[in-house]
Length: 87
Length: 103
Image 1 (cartoon, rainbow over the protein chains, first blue to last red):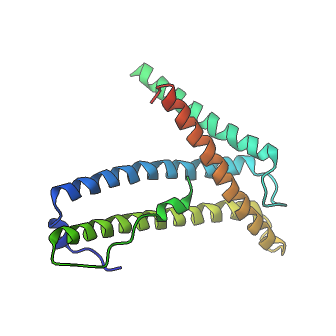
Image 2 (cartoon, rainbow over the protein chains, first blue to last red):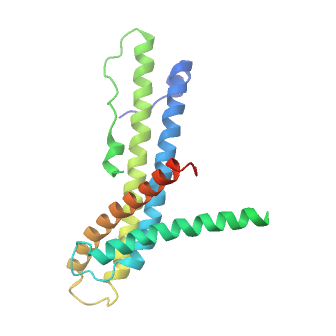
Image 3 (cartoon, chains in turn red, yellow):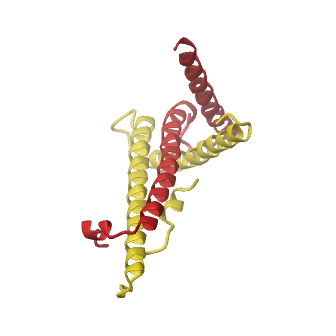
C-alpha cells in the first residue's frame, strides 16, 4: 500500500476530516481498552497461572483471573477516591 | 474484544476517477485502513512481547533442561485463554459501571 501524500491529506474536505477525527477517537478509546487488557493479563497471568502442564485454564485459574481483574479495578477506584479526598 | 476485529474495514477503492469526491473517499479509506493496520501491528507486537516475557519466566527457570518447548507452547495457549478471560471480565466491569452511571 502506498502512503498518503501531504497534498492528498490537505485536499480532504471538511466532512472527511470530521469523519477521520471521529474514527481516530473511537480507535483511540478502543486501543486504551486493549492496552489495559494487555496490562491486566500480564499482571494476572503471573499471579494465577500456576502450572504449564496444559494449555487449558483450570477452573481455579479462571476464577483467579476474574478476581484479579476485579480487585485491580477496585484498588484503582479506591486510590483515585483516596487522592481526591486529600486534594 | 478480539484482536481480529481491528483488521476489519473496507479496502480503499481502486478507481480514481476525475470526480474529486471519490478521490477524497479513497484517501479517507486508505487513511483508515493504514491507522487500523498500524494499531493491529502494535497490538500484535505487544502480545508477542508480553507472552515471551511471561513464558520465559514460567518455563525457563532451569536454563539447560530439555522439556521447555512443550511448556512454551502450553504457556502460549494458556496466555491467550487468559487474555480472553481478562477481556471478558474487564468489559463486563465497564458495562456494569456504565449502566449504574459511575462513568
